[in-house]
Length: 267
Ligand code: F6R
Image (tube, rainbow, N blue to C red; front, side, top):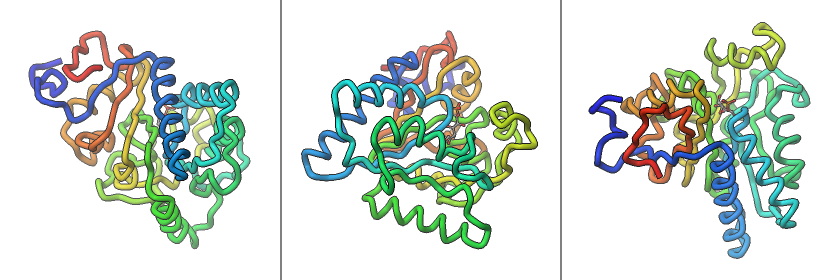
């Protein structure tokens, strides 16, 4: 890392890094979520969670499921909104994010029916615009997202806000980047089976969340983590828009941070 690296500066960094193994991060974030849910329940209010799919948050969902089961916790006051969904898949398709959420989150955590929101995978072209507007409206009517769980794509996408996405973008239909489709090809059983389009919350939708917890683990995330930490905010790397959010934390392991990492901000 060079002297110009903001992580080496003594000034307050704009993307604080919490060095954690995936298991430690999952315990920390699950605990934070459960505290939020409990405090909202005591106030008679809902907790609104923004959730991601993919490999990275799986351990958080497993910890939540275990704690809900072992401690007999109720998440009856939880409302969730997912970041994104592939377009052109049946909702029950094995690779749809709805299926992932039902199996990993909604079922184990007892989040039923109308409380778990995802963009639709099977909305027709004539209705996508209204659907995206309704998604934004539903988030606003729920009171906004209290805590957003986020991963980072190998090309710097957050949600499916691919490189080129604007800071002020909102929920919309997007064309998936070639690299995103290639990353998904194995799961779909071939590149030609990966959808070309998706619906994603926009960058501005994500940044509206009151807290954002970003996770990145493993050596395969090292390059994108370094570039995210070192670059000034811009559309070329949408994850850089997280810099300067009022309550954002990056949880990353040393594999993702690189052995030379000595961030002044690491907790
Ligand atoms: C998933 C999502 C994506 C992923 C990102 C990282 O809902 O919005 O941005 O968070 O592609 O994926 P994994 O965690 O599989 O490395």
